Image (cartoon, rainbow, N blue to C red; front, side, top):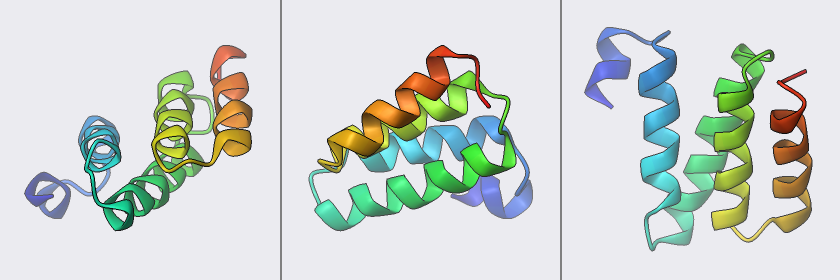
Length: 79
């Protein structure tokens, strides 16, 4: 999170934060992962990696339909 304070537009840091949050056992942290990954995907709409992370965050949060949709976008190379 400190990296995002110093470099808020750093895609790698944004993406990694979402992945770390998605792997937490706390459902609240997993929801934060979805929020972080959503913001990253919206800011990087042509990034398959961003949508892959969003799909993973949705999956970890138990939102299977949203996960499938995001992963389909990732497979198509982003929007």
